[in-house]
Length: 596
Ligand SMILES: *[C@@H]1O[C@H](CO)[C@@H](O)[C@H](O)[C@H]1NC(C)=O
Ligand SMILES: *[C@@H]1O[C@H](CO)[C@@H](O)[C@H](O)[C@H]1NC(C)=O
Ligand SMILES: *[C@@H]1O[C@H](CO)[C@@H](O)[C@H](O)[C@H]1NC(C)=O
Ligand SMILES: *[C@@H]1O[C@H](CO)[C@@H](O)[C@H](O)[C@H]1NC(C)=O
Image (cartoon, rainbow, N blue to C red; front, top):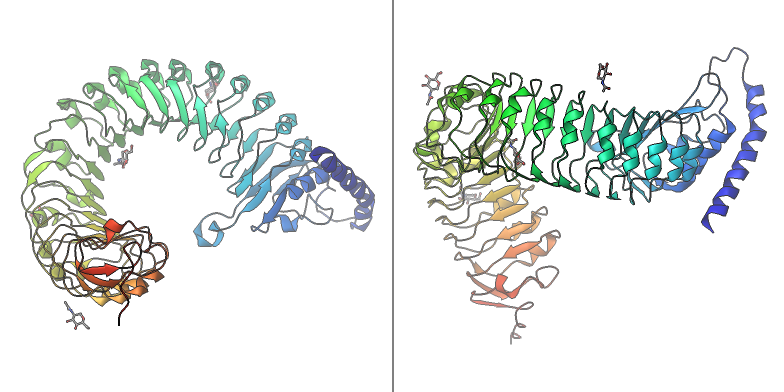
């Protein structure tokens, strides 16, 4: 039923177009420098596409009126002589809040396959174009670039795409494509770029891909691809970008990969790779970034890695790599800026001298069995992120952070640090401070009023802070505040509602008294609220019902009394969220007794 209607529409459009063409030619002034008249067949194909989109908030398709598809239609370009459409480029206006909500809703019309002279087809970032990639695209014999990124396309990658002999760049990333990659793509000998990342693709890489000798860019990340990582990847002698991360590849890292002497960026992270990092890794002499994190790699870091002259980003976190670190690293990797060796089977004992003395940007050595007092970093001023959590560090955080004025992210949780929080220096640009599970003490009024406008995450849970909460002022961007498992006293100030961006507030397991301020109801971004195990009394204010997006709340083990706010979702939270209070009643607890 569907196809005949569409064909009919197409024929109608074609007739219409043919009739109008001479008119336009007549209307055109002789010295008009403008565009060639649009080929009728192409205009019909474009209108077929437009008909498949039933909602367009980008405004692009509203320019597709009249017959002048080569001049006036946004995103369309024609051959200057023939009037055949050579480029169709539909991109959501980039960046900023302005364009971010815009979309096209509908399907890709098979009529696109009638744009026979098309060389470049870009329909990207439209977010709501669903349905399959039409097989008819295989008729676009001159197509060199096909970008259908960031839509909601479904179905499989059509095998027919293997019939596009001129194709040099193919990107289908950020859709919902399923099934296996078609082996036919391996016959596209001119392909330089493939990006099918962020889909739901399964199965192994087809062995035919070994024929894509000229490949420079291969992104298969964020799929469900499996099988062994194929050794033929090592034959892509011109490859610069290789991202196979976030899949289910297993087996060893093929040694052949180490012969990719042009590779700049390689990521194999978040797979199930086993075995050792190949000792020949140092042959990747152009390498800028290497990520092998979140695999099951064992054995030591190969000494040859020290020879990677251009490597600035090295992420080997979350494997089972063993120590000691090769001594050659101290003088090697001269370009290094970011180092992440967290959560391996390393027993570093101390932070290596070279890590403390070089001007690095990111140092992540969490869970590396580092002991003793926090050491000094002679180039601490260059650090932007530091993660030394889950070690056995002692000492004074305040002094340690003194000269680290560029830090944006600090994680020192899970150590044995002792410090007065009111003396902590807070770098101006700090956005995240995680010091949970230490032995910190001191006054919250000495710390909280000093947090800057960029601070989004503050986690001081499981320490020894025995002070009252200060009043909060407006203008903060805190999204996450966790002060649970301390000895916080006093009440919850009504001014907590000044934290308008707060999504998570955890004050549980303290000694907070007084009542729950009804101003909490103004914190409409709150998703998670835990004030359990305190000494709060009075009612749970009905004003909390204003927090429409709340997903988790816990009032357990206080001295609260009265009716639980009877509205969604407070009346359907588990009863345990209200248990062990003085006299709470109403859903999900038993009904309140009528007052007389
Ligand atoms: C690699 O790139 C070089 C230089 O651009 C080119 O001459 C060569 O043909 C390419 N190799 C392959 C296998 O495409
Ligand atoms: C290392 O990779 C993991 C993901 O696999 C990521 O969470 C972490 O932030 C990375 N480290 C750095 C320093 O970028
Ligand atoms: C911080 O830097 C100053 C000036 O460079 C230096 O004198 C001081 O010792 C440093 N303090 C710490 C704790 O590293
Ligand atoms: C917070 O502000 C209230 C009202 O302005 C005031 O009564 C209270 O003392 C202040 N609390 C603190 C800890 O500064």
